[in-house]
Length: 335
Image (cartoon, rainbow, N blue to C red):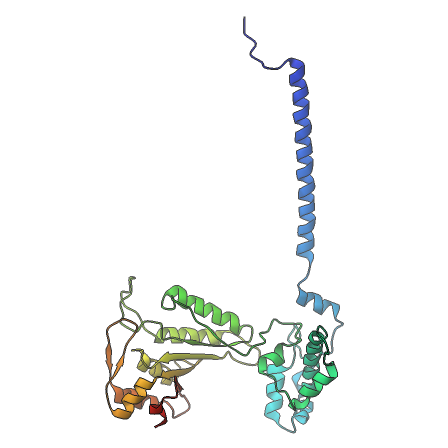
């Protein structure tokens, strides 16, 4: 005879099964309800428009103009200056999402800016009115904003930087490929929003330096100058090209190649460049003594001072120029 090992009677098991079925049904109902709520929320989120789209959709369609239609009126605004009129239309007049002009003269631009400033002013005590702010901007009489603020303040069609220029850089890993790619990415992201960018290349190791990859030696500064220059030329900024400033310390062993690359026609066309000159270099020039170039802790490189100084001087002539940034106002420089 088979032994009954069940801990519960048949009736108890039946009741227990009914309770489990009921709990399972309640759980499934809850899951279905939660899923339905989540789907509704997802549908609402995905159907909502961005603030820019919402702002544009709520606004009645504005009048649009062509450059030819408004050119003479803008020339008259600038007192007959056709160059100023063309620059304003191409670079600073507001355009809608389709690239059509929606501002007829700088007066419209100043009114747009004044309206936006007045909106912020109303959050504080004793706010200035829109007309008061407009009076400061009108005909560039008292306040002349920078280019990016003129293009960006009150702009409901594009995301535009309200700062003209940015200095970027990496702390600690600027010499790695990851650091260089990160710099390039930051540069492009800023430029696509109308920002100008500057960064120093002194942390990139000079040509011929040992590296721990299959190349075994570094290519040096120049290829990365071209990379950053090309990135600048690739970023389209309506009516203007990107603005990039590259600099290097005169102490860097590749400083001469840096100058040569800029002076070579067609090589670095998307960047302005500047050499950072220190007191030690200026004293060496003044006293006709030797000058040592060095990259961090790598072996010293004896520089041909006269050649380096002559290269800097010659780089100030002609249509392609290399800037000089003086790092201090030491008495050796003044003399």
